[in-house]
Image 1: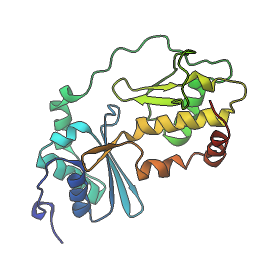
Image 2: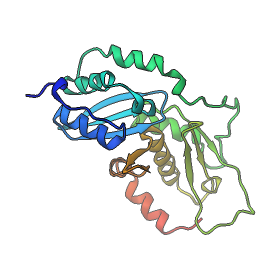
Image 3: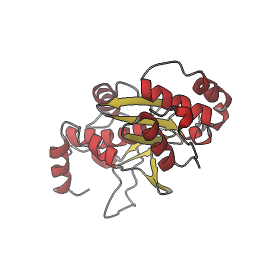
Image 4: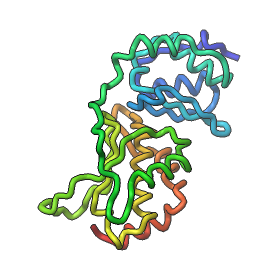
Length: 227
């Protein structure tokens, strides 16, 4: 069996080559996501014969010793990672500094409370690891467009904004939950890169999106209603 030292690590630090290296080192399929998530900058999760790795963008600048240590941890699923910890300390300046959050954010609507929805979804689907701020967006009656953006996630400010058009009597709670869940997935998974392009709705994203308990009902309701 090849050792990590025997594996050729010729990385231009693009995600495709990095993922291929991890797959060769661990001898298992790998899904690699590059994120701006500062609450969990490196995570490895084994799912059956495959594994999911999430790395903060700074790891695209990591040396071979750091990448090797992550691959070694992935192979054995245990062990200390002093090089990774040291790399995080030395590269803390690469973390995007968010603007100070406002002390007052609007989460309570007339029909739906975003904070309650967020907490329930965070507990049920994300093990309470999503730390984003969630707020209602600003109503703009003069902005009439055919297709509205129902939700958005900003990685720079780690903020989820939900269109207040959803705060209506006729909008079922499960559909508002689905929109919030979708944006929380963005916060949790970040963006992948493929062939030099940023991919936000990857195959893994769509797979996890369907785990929402009211997915079918929510998608059917959306098709039958216009905002």
